Image 1 (spheres, helix red, strand yellow):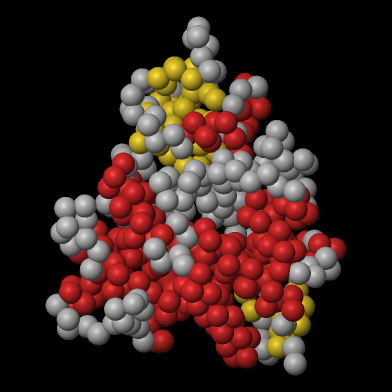
Image 2: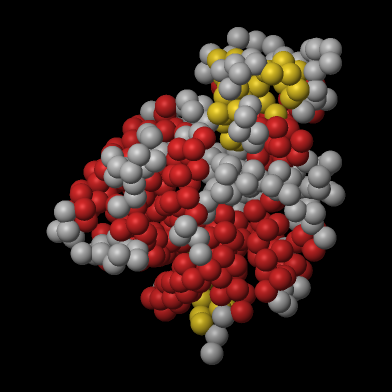
Length: 415
């Protein structure tokens, strides 16, 4: 096949434009070049950007792309932690990913759903006479639920500190200046606290259930049969706790969708309807912007040349709004999922590919169940009103939480 010229973004570097355009950076250029693939420069480095279903299938081909050294250091030191599963490949990745996937059992997911419902009921009972900012309340609820579900010993008075530290890791990961350093500090403190706990579990000086995820992580062994380095084990346990807290972003968008599309809420007559509504929230609203990888070795695809080591970004948000995949992608239509032809590459709000052998988020099932439980609770078990508020959000904020946070008032449990 003859080589095809890959469109190239003119200029020395486009990092500032990425920060300014946010979630629309890739699609703005894809539309401009009329190409699903183009070359740009970010942080002084040649970068290939891609969007679309076929491009996602290529991106998640583990024979062609590697995750090793793909995530910028500043993101590793805030969001993911250094040495975590997101940066592994091959057998080591499969083995470490299995540690996470083994927790996503039917019983485990049902337990989390029950905890979430219990925590929301407690929140409403405690604040029924006050306004509730959903995002802040959800972060607290999800943090407490994560600690309960994983079996991490905690004092309830410490939950706000846990929530702040876990939130810093995903709210400030891509920022600069003081906020970024605060996120690093929060990660360092959390890793130190978790590492100390895991050491005590190994020495049998901390009692936790042997069936709990925290014990599972503390005693996990690598491919050589050795216990994980305690620091790496702490990183991985935070890679379980942090994403659970981050579901608060989606919960805020679920309530925003309830506010913006009351006609769709009226159609929620079954669990399947709730599932479709949740999936449309995950497709429609921005969450993860892009996924990074590096080219393993030179190859040619559809006439385009990919050189070894080249940083490559897959546009997750753009693929979820691709008109070649989705009819009227910028409209909120939960019913589209009634006839959705599911594949690992056409709906990728939390990454694509296969769960067990690929880099798709291990917690995606849990995210869906938490959101379904929350939506069902608010629609079927709660009466409330929305306040006057600013529900706009910026597409260059990551995560792009509505400015006021969604705020409700006069919340009462239905009898």
